[in-house]
Length: 90
Image 1 (cartoon, one colour):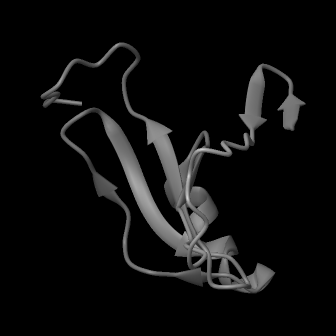
Image 2: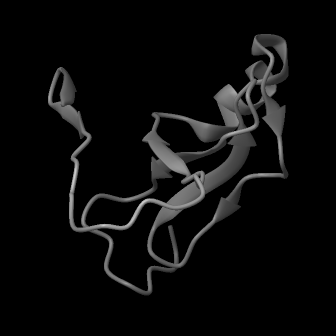
């Protein structure tokens, strides 16, 4: 099953070879244009900000938030296109 919006695609698959166990939550990363502009809007939409945004060595700015159900969501912003690891000076 999948969802396509513009040039983005989200796909769920089923693998009968994987044992079923306790359900786990996995973080979802969403690329946005400006992490810092969106962060103050999260609480007003029933989410929670888990901490400040940070610049990562691979060239992304990342903020950790949670949705109203407590699921982890990473807001990511590409700082420089094609930035190799490690990327400094952005």
